[in-house]
Image (cartoon, rainbow, N blue to C red):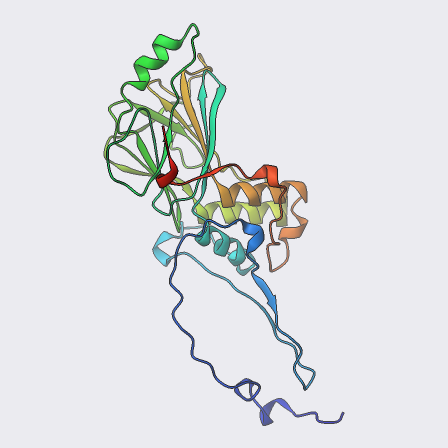
Length: 286
């Protein structure tokens, strides 16, 4: 073959001049998944070679859940998780949707009621005043105790919450210790609600072995014990979903997992209606 060179005669450094590699600072991006490609392919070289590759990322070692092996094939999923700090949040009164937003601040968000006078970079997700109905007084009574609210934020290893308000808050989700009795958020204590590594491992198990799809939704109930089989309809609740998990779940469900079996999770292309209004602290007017 003309111009063929055996591997030991030429190494990869000779194909292109060395370029300095600047440090890439980590930050939570607020752009949609579709705008980010993780699989790249370089232009063809004069000698007929073409370079392709995939970028992978992983959370710090201390964040990995013990006992859950993470395969290389889901590292691109970790890259998505590390670069997306958005949360999709729905607020309900008696199971009626009253607000739906997607937060974008890397610092997280605060779910509360009433005007906040604190200077903060948190996105403010505020419960609206209830409309005139039979439960208005009861709802307003609970809302009066949500002044400082609860803070939620995405870290590289998962979703965390910290309750600051006087109101009791109970939650349910993939990391809840109890499934048959209430799980309470203690005041001024940080609680982990969702684990990124566990979600990706369970998603991989779905793709390879037909296991159930992982849970990723977190439910918060304000002022009433939850879950409560005797009383399903609560006065005030919030549903929280990490956006990266929501989109990976949707993609896996639509494709029955087969697209997740390769070494690359595919780019997530969703319709515009899948994205909701992105809010920022500077533009909030409640």
